[in-house]
Image (cartoon, rainbow, N blue to C red):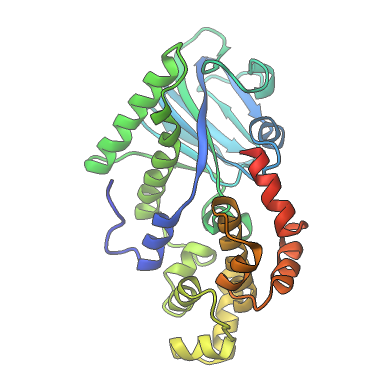
Amino acid sequence: MTGLGPTHPAPLRDALERLRLDGAIFFRAELTEGWSFASPLTEITKLLRPGADRMILFHIVAAGRCWISLIDGEKHWAAAGDVIVLPYGDDYLMGGCTPADTVSLLTLMSGPPPWTTMPVLSHGSGGERTDLVCGHLHSDDPLFDPALRALPPVFVVRVPEGPAGRWVASSINYALAVTTDSLPAPPSSTKLPELLLTEVLRLHLATAPMAEHGWIAALHDDVLAPAMARMHTAPEHKWSVAELAGTVGVSRSVLDQRFRDVLGRSPIRYLTEWRMHLADDLLSTTQLSIAAIARRIGYESEEAFSRAFRRSHDSPPGVWRTSQRRSM
C-alpha cells in the first residue's frame, strides 16, 4: 500500500502505521429505488459488539448512488466506487435518489449474530438498484476518539486513479465477491476491513482541508507535533510542562495554551490519555503484569496506575482486561 506523501508530518504517518483495528464486513445490501433507512448505532453496536463504547462504520458503494447524513444533518452523496466512513459511530440516515419512507435498519436485519453466512438486506420499491457492502471496526486509537475531533463525523472518499486507487478498487471487488458467496467468508477476508479503512484514511487525509482544531491539526502544528512526538516516544518519562516546552523552544504558558486551543486539554491531560491508550493495548495484547505495564507507561507504582486507569475507565485494569478477553 502507499504511504502518506511528503505533505504529511512524520507523527501522522506513524499514527496511521500504529493503528490497531479489528472488525468485519457484516452485511451486504441490495437496495432499489425508492428506499431509505435509519441506523440507530447505539443499538447496532450492542448487537455487533457488546460492551464496546464506540464503533467505526463504513459503507462501500459497489453499484448505484445514494446519500448519507447524520440525524438532521447535511446529505453527503456517494456513487459506485466511493467509500463512506462514520468514524465515531453516530446515528445516521441513508437513502436513494427517490424520496421514500424511512425504516429502521434493525427491522431489515435477519436476527442477531453469529451468522453462518453473510446477511443480505433487501429493501426498496423495485427501481434502480444500489449495492452496498457494509463493515464495522473497533479501535481505541486517539484518531477515533470523538473528544479529540480528529475526523469529521461522516465523510465520503472518492477513490482516485493510481496505485492506491487500484488497490482500494480491487479490495472493493474482493469484498463484494466474498459477500456474494453463500459460503462462509475465507479467513483472509477478516483483515480486509482493517486494511481497507487504513488506506481510505490515507486517501482522505491526503486531500482533506486542514482543520484548525483536533488531533490531526495538532499533528501538523509546529509546536504541538514535536511535543506530542516526545510523549508518544517516551511515555515512561516523567514529563513536566516546563520540560516539554523547553524541548520545543516555547514557554510553559504558550505550550499549555496551544494544547488547550487545538486539543481542548492540557499537555498533562493529553499525556495521561495517551498512557491510557497504551495501557489498553498492553492489557489487551500482552501477558505483562499490571505492575510491568504501569512502569512501561510512566507510573511509579501499580497503585498509582490503577487509580488513573479507574478514573479513565470506571474499572480497575485487571477487571477491564478480563472483560476484554471475554468479548474477543
